[in-house]
Amino acid sequence: MKKLFTLLLLLVAAVGLVACGDEKNPDEPYSVAAFQQTVRAKIEEIKSRGKLPIIVGGTGLYIDSLLQNIQFSKEESNEEIRQELTALFDEKGAEYMLDWLREIDSETASRLHLNDRSRIIRALEIYKLTGKTKEDINNAVIEKRESMKNAE
Image 1 (cartoon, rainbow, N blue to C red):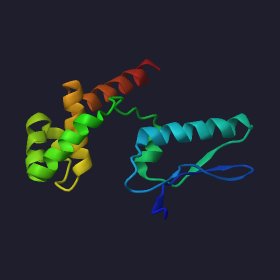
Image 2: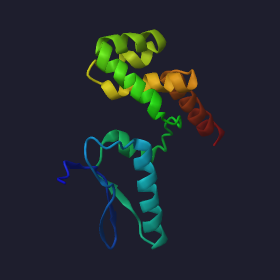
Image 3: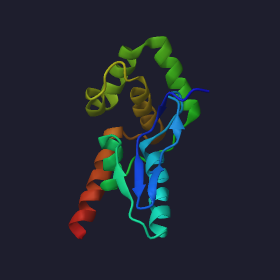
Image 4: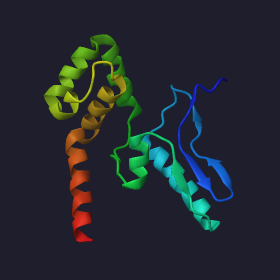
């Protein structure tokens, strides 16, 4: 099976180059949170050998998630709800789903494009699972991070 892309992040240890991030196909789910977990384990492995990991490459979100210890929503996904929302998306279309999201979470909806199917579905899934909007959850994480910074 041909790999279509490789997630970017390389850790350079004093003894050589270590690739971090599994090769993934575009249809395979992979989140920033999963990326953080993989990379943090690799960083600890390198540090346990007495080496200094140096992070190079990657996108801003992925690098920032490591450097700033960004915490992402811990809301679990629910495959049944996701399939229900996906079927509704296929039946009613992107405009209908984005309008629905605007009614629930106008802030998140304003940042999404009609073509951003997976993020529209995920925002609605989070709401159905928690009763909270993605924006409310993000704001709570930011407030917690700020209060931790102020406590230092």
